[in-house]
Length: 64
Image 1 (cartoon, rainbow, N blue to C red):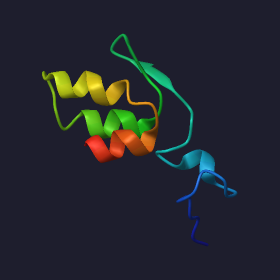
Image 2 (tube, helix red, strand yellow; image 1 turned 120 degrees about the vertical axis):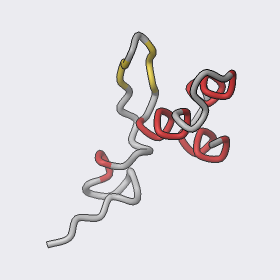
Image 3 (tube, rainbow, N blue to C red; image 1 turned 45 degrees about the vertical axis):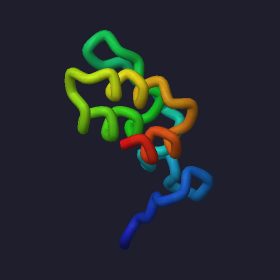
C-alpha cells in the first residue's frame, strides 16, 4: 500500500514538509521541516535566517 502525503489537508498530511509541526534544532525554532530543508541550501548566510522566518512553508520553498 502506498501512502501519499502531498497535501496537509489529506489523511496523512501530518507527514508533509508543509505540515505545521515546528521543532527546535541547534537552538533555532523551525516552523516546518520545509523551512529547515530550504534553509540548509544557504548555510552561514543571511538567506538561512530569512527562510527560517518565512511566513509560510510555501514562501520558504519559493525562497529556497
